[in-house]
Amino acid sequence: MWMKSRPRRDFLGQSLAASAMAAAPWLISPAAAGAVGTAAPSEVIRFGVIGIGPRATYDVRSMSNLPDVQCVALADVQASRREAGKKLVEELFPNTKCDVYRDLRELLDRKDIDAVLVATGDRWHAPASMLAMEAGKDVYSEKPCGITIAKCRQLADTAKRTGRVFQAGTQRRSVPNFRFAVELAHSGKLGKLHTLYASVYEPQLDNTWLPREQTPSKDVVDWNLWLGPAPWRPYNKAYVQGGWRGQFDFDSGARLLDWGAHTLDLCQWAAGADDTMPVEYEPAADKITCRYANGLTAILDFLKTPFGDRAPKFITALGTCPVRFVGDRGWIETGDEGGVELQPESLKAELPEGLSRVKGLDVSAHARNFFDCVKTRGKPVCNEEVMYHSHAACHAAAIAWILQRKLTFDPVKAEFPGEEEANLLRSRPERDPFAA
Image (tube, rainbow, N blue to C red):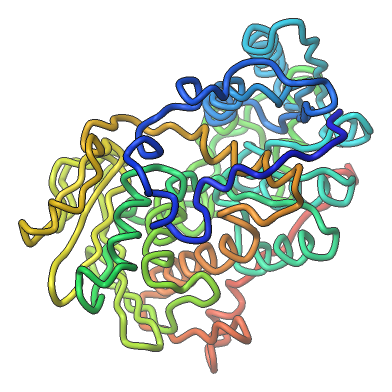
């Protein structure tokens, strides 16, 4: 377990401009920068994983590039995932024995674990994160971090009360091309911002129960723990194989948060609105228009499929999760492929050398920021309040879409004034997953 702190590598610095003082920080990988190597035992952060599906696998691979972290345990309700996860961890972290648990509480009882990665399905993100914080662990949670506005607020409040470090897995805040786009928006070189575009999946809402199948033994799939706080329903293997997505009981915000937790979050950042959110939400057939109190507009533009059978109207072929920031003197757009488009032509001189050659989404820097903050007790770039405001905005947009009417929202009171039906959707009834 780590014992001493070392100076924080604040890759964002006091401003994005400071972090971009040379071309190298935009391009150098953790390995090339000397991040991969060995660390003194007193410097090593020992972490566990709660939920070891495809997303956790992606995260753990990136974390294995960091010299001062070690994955020592994982918890998952599915035996097949426990076995595959153990094999993966012991391959990625040589000389490490990875213990496995069915019940996350057994992992959280371990005093030698400093932090956890939470990468379950949506319904478990906030409950698992809060249990971890109460157990004295710092938390890196995949998004959506909370299945409702109320759960996101409770999660943020728990982080504050317990003093734990929290990082939301909205990794694009740590990716060079997205950082550059926000920096340009903040610089004033686009002029006064007036419209921000965030691509999202086309909303989806379903609560049709799949046919009942024979429930496996707990050692194969612990169905009660898989359901967690969600309402009980009969077992069907399709749920545990990913078929829970789009189901109201299990999913967040009619799937708007699948991308919106990233793309609207980037719009929040560009708008300088990390401590607030839009106050008006108006759904239409192909978008949801969100308006801030200062008149700035953010548009959630629907994609027809997860990777788009049509491009958003505003975007070029820049990959998944594209965003566009528009001012009265110019615009910039970028996506997961790393490319950047911007106008007027004169703005292209602002591009750091080689930025357009960055391909793919490397999340190592986001993990690096989290683990550095575990040591320094600083605030990560996607801390609990950043998460709360961008997630709550997505949830508010989803509620407007579900009700198919324009809604206003009070960011201070966290309520829809005079809208009883909308206010009821800020939270959901919950089961006690440990009672059965």
